[in-house]
Image 1 (tube, helix red, strand yellow):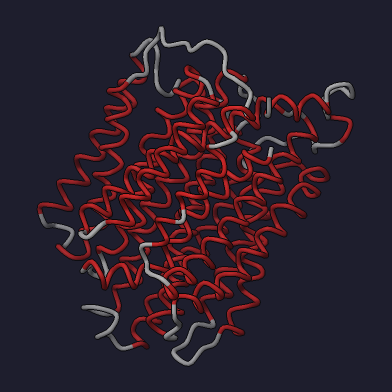
Image 2 (cartoon, one colour):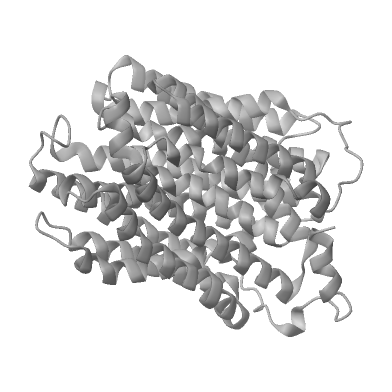
Length: 473
């Protein structure tokens, strides 16, 4: 379980470590205030676009093989990103990092879902969720320390030793896969349609504020994205071996979990951007100070995912836990952004950060436990990939939309803008994200009532000990 949990730490670190370094990256490589989001969005686009392919590859080739391959992608692309001297190389490296995540993430979830049952599975997801929260905390802090004391390049270089910590023991520690099943192929055309379609939509949303929504680039990109995604579903309905079996869309817990994740990550990606923009360009924090400002938020998230989520799921079930987490998360973000002023302080942000973090921890554990319920073991990879695809697409699209809203109150760079105008836009974007989360909490109630996960629902008593041995050989 340690290797699986630490893998989630790497994924979370890689997502969060970049936020604190964004101002330095933008200055070093000449990104504009609007285009800078591509450092985050490039990762989310390739991650989300290829997750279905990664999930199906896990089911066909084996979780262990994809687990190791994903880590290799992470390490190699991090080296290239750290050495980048231009925008295109850095964005390309982030795209490859996303590919690594698209292989690693479903492999980890499949190993957890197929190796634990009942209460043991709830505990495993709690450990996994706490590891993700720990990664967010470590990412924010490491991003600040490395950027301040060394260079923004080290937010990429640090992934190399982290990946090696797992890569070295993994071939011996993780249970070997069975024979690969490649007889049905991998539906590469559908993977291309999904990836290019999502990328086109995000491109349209990112370029719209700069070029104008009626300009050729954003309008044509949005139209192309919609057409390609429609073509993706048509292809999946006709192919004999679909990348995403459409019958899984009849699984209500999975579909609702995907919708909730889409809303959750939409708000979360925008809120992280709002937070780091407020404490650096507005309050003038150094990168290390910004990393420390993130720390309470992510530590409270560890409490939510590691301590509160398992207890609430055991007592009330995943449906109520997910609803509560979304609402609490939205209230926390709202409390955080309403106190943002040009003369604000870290202490004013702390109460909102507490509520925000606890709610996020509840969501992260309960939503993925919900997504995998009622899905056969041989399709856990693609089910987890479907849920995480919604998460990553929500992050990319939400970041594009909320950044556009945040930047709508001024023109030019942050250095030239009036801090009061910057704060006005940040508050507006944050409050919209908070409202979406509350609506997403109500959406979670669409999941059918399920029994709480109790000891009585656990796997047979003779199986609890071997279950942990099934993950690590």
